[in-house]
Image 1 (cartoon, rainbow, N blue to C red):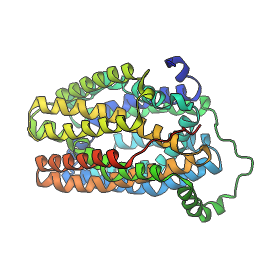
Image 2 (image 1 turned 45 degrees about the vertical axis):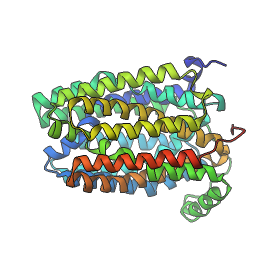
Image 3 (image 1 turned 180 degrees about the vertical axis):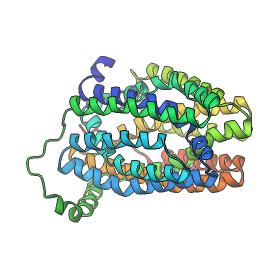
Length: 403
């Protein structure tokens, strides 16, 4: 049965996708240049890693609470309130006087990201099983649209205005974020109504007990999938994700505008691939797609060992392809494996393990990159190979997908 994009991008899925596009405008202006922003504010290579470490570590612990609230109290309220907090942080980034302030803002932003499990649960609740992977891929692909045009704009502002150019990018990011937050506030529909809401004072006492119960009731393969993502998938991509802009500008010698153009090209390739595979993605075994993703990350790290504009462009394209595949397929497989009433908590456990992995991977990548950029990509390639082997031997798909 073919899948129409109109069938998928309606209701909550359409609202979430449009809000992601609006956030994507600001992120396309700022994210490709965040390491450069930290450097311009006085930060060193390891300081960039420390920002990622602390923000992800804080987010790791709060994510559990966010997932519990999503299951115990409902999804929408936590999404709306904390989205506005995220928007406020964009303006604080814009006027940060030093990298230490950026660190503080990133930690505060991490606290507000507690809503992510709730938003993920709304998205998964709103997609039927036979459209999950394709629907997630289409929603994620739509968010690439700003990345087709705005990264070179951010690079141009950086090249012509320097630090003030990046500050302007963050102000624009805050403005588009306001539109996204308003859209979620007025258009998003609740998907998990709860008749009896527990007292908030009892939540912290029950959260760990309920998570342990949820983990015990979850299939073992779902836990293996979460562990594989945390121990291998994320670390294998972290060096380029964290230091790609610095590698491109400092090692290879690209300008900010050229790096932005490379980002746009990679997004074009990723979007074309996503749109052409969207209609048939759910017909392929999830395991096969995970193996393709792992091989893509392995290839990305291998080409970076040889510094040149061509290797940077190739790695950027491969990274974008992997990113479009990895979370849509893994989240779809996780939803296939887990009952709906456990999905919020297990989504939170998945998000917790991913953010905790990102914290540790930030430090690992920072230490190795400070020693040698090329060695950091060699180590990442080895980790990607281990990821492929784990998926090959330990991941199994369910015979019947959960609704």
